[in-house]
Image (cartoon, rainbow, N blue to C red; front, side, top):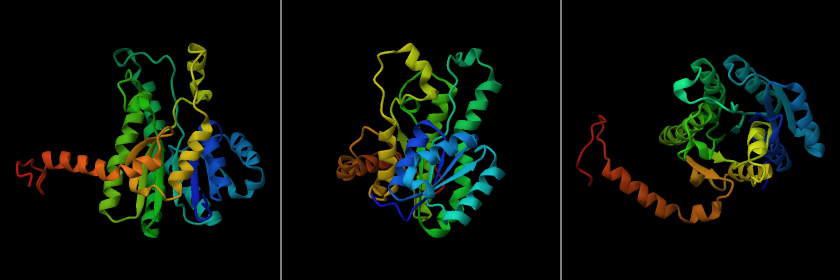
Length: 273
């Protein structure tokens, strides 16, 4: 897929899934800014891009700091042009976290700052230009732990919030006629520094290659699957099959909407016709 018209920011691009996504986008022709706190890790990603390294820009920053992220967006715009793709990948996970009724709420909320506020800060920083340009895509890495009945943790709670953010922001952008699409993505169980505790606990676990995430994000960035906007998709999904089923899915969604129809003042009605 040819992404030569795309300018991307990938958070958490210094290692793991974010690194693979950045490399995949650059290989497809996109100009890619990688954002994380470690300049050294970002520089390593840029070196791994090899012949595509000129299309990779190292932009160290704390994604929870709104001023720093705005500076990065301005730097990327000056260097590559307006940002057309944001990939919210960076996240933290605290292994062995106690249940909520025993948790240290300050520590719990710190993870939420990174996993939820961070993507919000980045989205807020890129959206004005995207809306002005009339195009753009926001792809946010979530997890099955955010949509399936996993035990509650700061991580699963945050990932659930990101799925809902993708859905509702997508509706807002569509109603505004912005031309900007949102997607939430499940990378599967990828072996990274974040998941090393699982590797030790489940030595026979079958891991999902990080390359699958790079392939999926590249496909979504191409625009070919924009009709799936606002949805949660997995690296294991057949996007072409999902596209073929869209009419059926839309009919199901319309039925649900009609069964819970609201009037202009937000009052539920029984006039479904």
